[in-house]
Length: 321
Image (cartoon, rainbow, N blue to C red; front, side, top):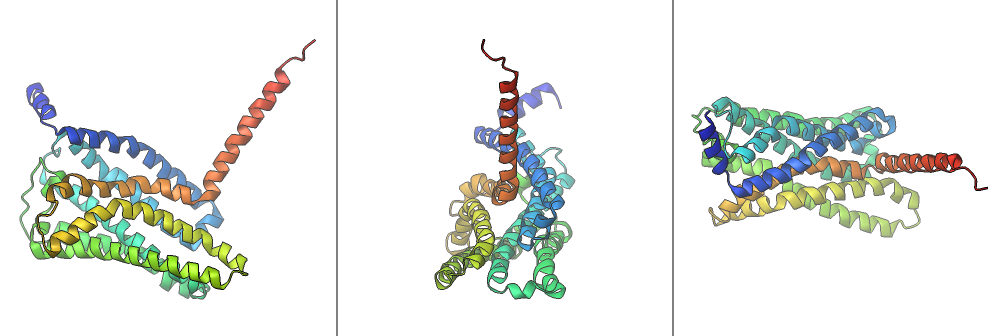
């Protein structure tokens, strides 16, 4: 590509895309560092690793790392240059596949997490045996976070029999051909957006009501409340972030499919779709925040280090004569 062509491409970039690029880039690298740091501590700490409700965090962190390396670079490059590069069908298909895979995975992982919290808090006896943990914990996590997202997106993005017509100047190259078919697009939106968001919202609200009722009923049983308080607050923390980032797209999608097909279409494409990308970028920070055992040790180590330095300095200061 000549210098003139490159200069023209830079000049034609939407200024709003440049702002989006800067914001996304600011959080991208710290998100990777936070993901790896938190995931390492979760894996190496036996107590945290064996705690069932922390396995949701493990899944979310792995999804975030995959998204950071396999999808976000394409998005950042598009925001920076205003076009998909390299401009090939293979690149566009890869971009769409990894984006859809990570998005579907985090949606359904969050949805299952909200359902599983009810079992962990109110039906904890289901997890006392190895068979129970396999049926009600490990299998659903693998299904929601891995098996279903991979299989559904392989069929829709990679194997669906249609001809791609990509637009290299559009986000995600204008999507794959299967999503241009109304029936497939409707299924994709319902199965990968509407249903998991509805499940997460309803089960989180129901959990809040059930926990408040349970707390009033067993006020004397403080030990039981303290045991469940952490997983309850952890879900509220993760759900609050996730719903704040995905609700705008969810609401616009409901309106579009109900009565007004073009309602807020330009805003949906330009902003709300990209806002969903931040769910995997910001999730590692919320995962770390919800693990007080990790960040409290960090602050403790920092405090001890500062105190040690101050002690050494005090000892090296000669006494006044």
